[in-house]
Every structure is written in C-alpha cells, then in structure tokens.
Length: 215
Ligand code: HEC
Image (cartoon, rainbow, N blue to C red):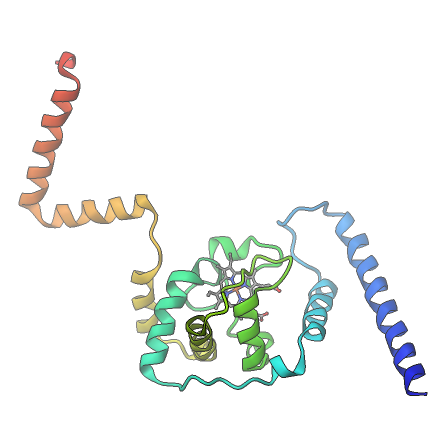
C-alpha cells in the first residue's frame, strides 16, 4: 500500500515536472535563447520548487555555527564587496550590470523570497552554486571556506538593514578595472601637484627618447 502511494505521488510529480517543463520550453520558443528576456512567473516558480526538492532536509536544517558580531559582519561585508557585488551589488538588490542581465537575473536578496530561505539553504547555495544559472559555487571543501560561507549567510540576513555608511565603505572594496585604477592614480597625482609635474616631465623625456625623429 505504502509503495503504491509513493508510486502515484511519483507519477504525479513526474507529470507536473514534464508538463511544466514542456510549457516553459513552449513559452521560451517565442524568445529563442536570448538571456535578455525575463523568466516568466511560471518558470521562476518551477525553478525554485525544483531547487527546494533537490535539497535534503539535513542540509536545509543546518544552523549557523558562526556568531553574529560586528567583526564577523565587517569581514563578510568586505568578502561580499569583493566576490559577490559584481552580480548582487553591494546592497543585495541585484541591480548590477552583470546581475541584471543574467538569465535568471540575480534576485533582490533583501526580499522575502530570499530571506525566507533557511540558513542551511543559503549556506548550501553559496557552497555549491545553482546549476544552469550564473550563480557559481564558492566552496572547495575546506573548513575555512565553510566559515566564510556561514559569515556570508550572516551578512545576507543583515542586508535588509544595511546602512548607507556600510554601503559607502563597501564601494571602496569593490574590485577595480585597470582603467578605474589609472583614473584614481591620476586623481591622486593631480591632488598631489608637485608629483604630477614630475610625472609629466618624465613622461615627456621618455617620449622623446622613444620618438627622436618626431621633433
Ligand atoms: C556571476 C554572478 C554571480 C556572482 C559573482 C555571485 N552570484 Fe549569487 N546568484 C547569482 C544569480 C544569477 C542568482 C540567481 C539564481 C537563481 O535564480 O536560481 C544567484 C543566487 C544567489 C543566492 C540565492 C538567492 C535566492 O533567493 O535564490 C545566494 C544565497 C547567493 N547567490 C549568494 C552569493 C554569494 C554569497 C556570492 C559571493 C560569494 C555570490 N552569490 C556571487 C549570480 C552570482
């Protein structure tokens, strides 16, 4: 009897998955494979259900072993600014060049959809990533990594209360492109007048050396 119930439940689940999958692909057909479209509500729902089903209760129910303290949060904030903000933005809204244009896009993690996930789910996602999405896996099996991920879970819980000061601090910790670094150096040189003269002089000399026939 028990087996029969499981069989029927399994058959229904399979029908829903196949049917739902079919519907999603039918719908996707209209947009080709462009990542510029927004996932439909149905697709979003189906993907999140599949994710929830795939997670064992053991993983879901794990509790955070890392204490909530200002030092831990500061540590996690700089980690987030360096590794996560490119897609999730400093405040977790997902309003970042890359995060906005992924399919599915990076969600606004301050909202209930994310905040209602358990600590165990958030931890699992950070360690393992999410298949067929832009979310990478960050764990490599070391306990140090695990500590870092649990700290990030603390930070995700803090996102809805992030202060403007904290966000400003994070901006300085975001990775910079070579162009941005050059611009900052030029600004520093400009503010530091005498050094900037020195710079131009040297630059001119080396230019002359390299192109002696131009003058
Ligand atoms: C290259 C882009 C990218 C980077 C970098 C990235 N993520 Fe993600 N992340 C995503 C995308 C896209 C999703 C949404 C996937 C989905 O809808 O299933 C996501 C989802 C998540 C989720 C699940 C949220 C939810 O409500 O489903 C968590 C937690 C998360 N990311 C944490 C992190 C952390 C922590 C870092 C840094 C260590 C990070 N991410 C770095 C792209 C990224």
